[in-house]
Amino acid sequence: MMRFSKDAEPARAASRQAGYRRLIAFTLALTLGIVMLGAYVRLSDAGLGCPDWPGCYGKLSPLHAQEEIAKAVAEQGGEHGPVSMGKAWREMVHRYFAKALGLLVIAIAVVGWRRRHVLGQSPALPVALVGVVILQGIFGMWTVTLLLKPAIVTGHLVGGLLTFSMLLWLWLRQLRQPRHVDAEPVAALAGPALGAVVLVSAQIFLGGWTSTNYAALACTDLPKCHGLWWPEMNFRDAFHFVRELGKTGDGENLPMQALVAIHLMHRIGAVLVALYVGWLGWRAARTEGLRGLGGALLAMLTLQWLLGLSNVYFSLPIWVAVLHNGGAAVLLALSVALLYRTRQARLQV
Image 1 (cartoon, rainbow, N blue to C red):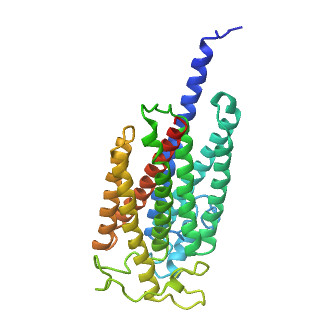
Image 2 (image 1 turned 90 degrees about the horizontal axis):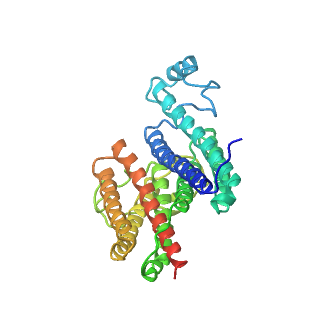
Image 3 (image 1 turned 90 degrees about the vertical axis):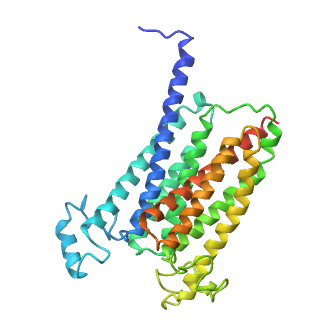
């Protein structure tokens, strides 16, 4: 029988940990891709390309549901409506990738639980990830079966970015943490970094609410809106969350003033994020041990602003809007990474 020497055991443990880290990294990259793909599905009006769940007209793929799709296209008078073969494929590809993500997250949780003693880490985070992904699946079903209700669609986006952030935190735990010569300046940014995560998350929610209510072009001029700094707005209907798409809580058509309110709050949020995260990125860029992360935060913040302005100036090109969604995820990731690094530095103080 082959025996492994005691010297081989640490090497085997390190190899397993590296494999676990690569599994998390792959799942993290897939999650970012799914977030951007979901944005593309939403922005191309393909969310109801297959109006049932989990299949497409009860079939495995749009290829198997060609007759049903053709009938729906004929009934709606052409492919300009919510159903078409292209929209059905976009919707189903998004679902296929989401199912693959679910399996990968389960694998991460199983490995994290079985190797919890070798890794020296609590399995609580990977197990919680399974619960979040299950909830995401439910929101994905509700997105279709409840006909794109804004609160459900926005919740689905937020859940996707929560999954992304939790995977990032788990991946960061697998890395060898740097030892800071002077940990106090790094640790001092832990509170501000938490503030950045909260503020960016709130802005992502406002961006999702803007997108799911189709309010991205409610203001088409810059920097004013309809030629005014403070146009007429309807906040009561704008932020009434339990309602149908395009309707008020009373079932009336959602007025333009409500869409303007949603859009303008997202703009104001962008200014607040720019000021706060810009300040934090500048502080981090001047702090030994955080310079690269601070520079990346400033660069991503600038890119996000340019993409946001381009959405309005160029009347919402799909590829710009999709990149804006991806940029929001990356900006959140950098804020989460900064929070993690600063909290680790606190342990060294």
